[in-house]
Amino acid sequence: MPPATAIVEPSSAGNLPAPPARLTRPALFLDMDGVLAPMAPTPDAVLPDARRTAVLKALDARLDGRLAIVSGRTLAEIDRIADGASRSASGVHGLERRRRDGSIVRGAPDAGVAEALEAFQQFAERDEGLIVEDKGVSAGLHYRQAPDQAEAAADLAGDLADRTGLTLQPGHMVLELKTPGSDKGTAVTAFMAEAPFAGAVPVMLGDDLTDEHGFEAAERLGGFGVLVGPARPTAARYRLDGVDAVMDWLERLEVEA
Image (tube, rainbow, N blue to C red; front, side, top):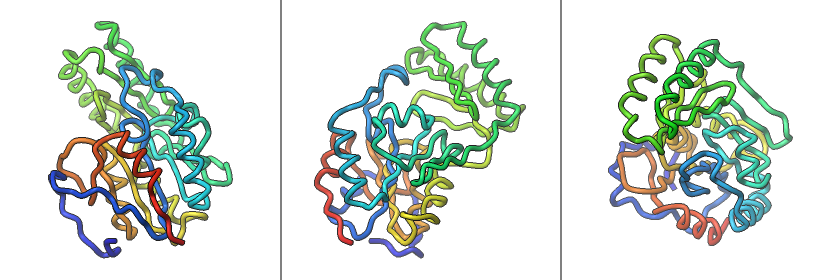
């Protein structure tokens, strides 16, 4: 397991091995879409799954609560999809965070979010495949069902980011403009400063660029990241092929106190 002082250079991930089958006192931080759940045409098409729920509940018990879902989705959506299996969770790229005791830390929305929402909604009128998502502290524009709009959507989001000061967060065929100041790395760092995570070894599983902050935070705090999906440049030390591989690894994982 890498020491806290290790410096990780971005890797192509092509030759990254699968993560170890046995970990000592890990704290698991798991992204939702593309990691715990397969990607779907629309955000609400991702549904609860009996195997996923059972795996998460079993892990939460075995890890004495050192399990958190860290996602771009809202806490409400995390709970819907995970069927309430993760008491600790962070949503909207760190802008919402629920501690193990149930208390919630939520940032106030930047004034620019309303402007971004209005602009995205006007833009979405050009194609019924475009979906606008209002997360309160951020605005998302999904173009998975309208891939020909990708370039125009990116231009719009970039202009809005420059004008409003919102943080532009690209994802899997989605562009999100969010209130600045938090990301998945700040969420992991905050969890690791609290019970029951403090003193454990952080392990972050993620699939896209939004998860790189989480990989970097886990590495900095003495743990590591696991990239899920195709090889690409990454700060993660290990890789798994996809959601099924994640579920298999989580089910087989041996945990030492």
